Image (cartoon, rainbow, N blue to C red):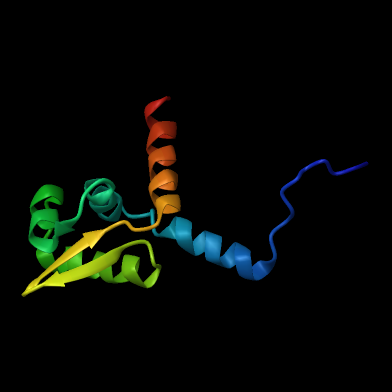
Length: 103
């Protein structure tokens, strides 16, 4: 039997990183935060108000997302603004939303 699948089986290291990436989308607050910054840069206070969580919670989520390199931060005085920098993450996020909304 020939395997015509052009996508090879992932090695353990790559599989672990992909699993970690998808774990980043496993919290509803984090997903809502990401939805707010898909198309624009926002500060922690604005994100907290939009999502309905504390600024501390937003900062906690953003720290993890920054470590995963899903978001980038820019400081302006005392405020920190976040954005999704990688177009792959934007596409992945939008595809996930489209998949759910099409059902």
